[in-house]
Structures are given as structure tokens and as C-alpha cells.
Length: 162
Image (cartoon, rainbow, N blue to C red; front, side, top):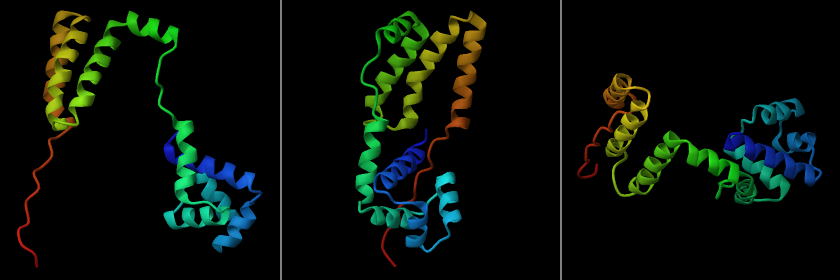
């Protein structure tokens, strides 16, 4: 579920726990109840409306965001079954290794330059499919890299002020 959808579901849960109905929200926002129901169903809010609904519930937006965080927790370890599957799949291990190399590097090197780490991995993985197919996959991957992820244009410096 998208983070915004989780945020809206958390807001709905908090409104229910405070016995705040759609009719109450509609009156507070100066809207019809049908419009409020539609807004919740589509999960589309302006920030000002979201802020006013939080105000009605007696909470800050930051409190609502903190309530979302535990539900969206990061997995910190694998189950034994997941570990066995992971260790048994050499291609998956190679992709994970490349990601583990790239993740810390992206903080000290430009992201565009890190493609060089993935190209050998693509070559090794694709070579297991067969020599020519492997080389072809690596070449296509290298050639399409600039097309699919163009390097950023340098921004011009503006000297002086007007």
C-alpha cells in the first residue's frame, strides 16, 4: 500500500477512535458529507484540509505521521525459509551484493557513476543463460543506461543578485 494510502487509513482509524464522523468532518471543513466521503475514498487531500482534519481530531500532523511509521517498519531479518531460498539462488545473492556495495557508495559518489557496479553483475547473471545471450544482455544494458537514466545536466551558476 502506498504511504499516502496508509496515512489516510491511519487518519480514518484515529477519527473512529475519537467518535468523529464524516458528517462532523464535513461541517468542520464547510463541505458536504458526500464530498468528504469521496475525498477519503480517493485518498486525495490538500495539505490544508489534512491539517484541519487533524486539528478537529485534536492532534498534530506530525503525530499522525508517527502513527504510520510502526506499520511501515523495515524488515530487519529474514525467516529461516527466506534465508534458505536466498542462499540457494546465486543470481539473487549477486544482486543483493551489488546493492550492498552501492547503498553506502551512493552517499559519497554521484548516483550516475554507480552504474559501473551493476554492469558486471548483469554480465555474470546473464552469462548463466548462455554466452551470446549473456554478452548481448550486458551490451544492451550498457547502451540503454544513458537512455533510461540520463545523466543530470549541470546547473548554471547565477552570480550576483538583481
